[in-house]
Image (cartoon, rainbow, N blue to C red; front, side, top):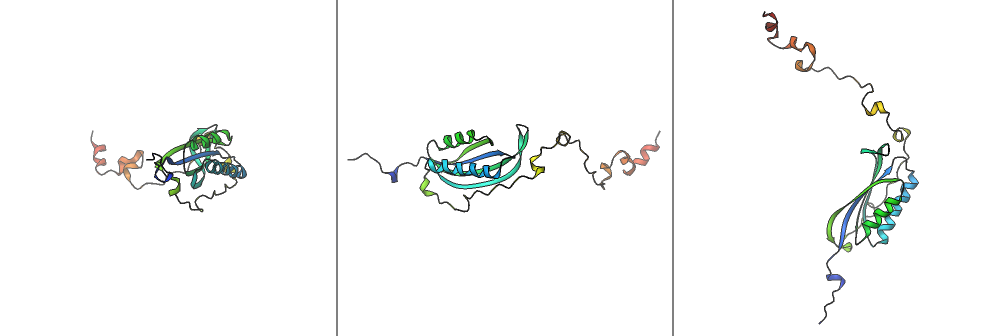
Length: 179
């Protein structure tokens, strides 16, 4: 009587993960490609499988990071076992152009072999060179909303027009005549 188990009936121990990492807006497109290649190599080196890569482009950050209000967001979805996430995050921490990263578990107990990869979804879309407007941080006055903004259009609602709104209210003439 044997008590050993075969690989086919073992409990799956892999997990499905999503990682989003944020690059500086000033990152060179070649450097962004090198970072994406490094992420692929770490996942492949730890027997993981890359499922999807999306370059979300330059977006506004929820809060400033090192005087920057914008960043380049990259989304990665993959399946792996063991210390894959720890190794990936260690590599991301070592890269100066990566300012933030976060990983979440999407599914527990999956099998890597069960996932089919669409080659079109794992292609990294090359980052375009930033325009000078995108690289420049807005001035303090713009951040505080102190710049001239276009005036609002005239509203037809007499109750929202302003100080003389009592003149347009029915019955308002009678209120002014009383002593």
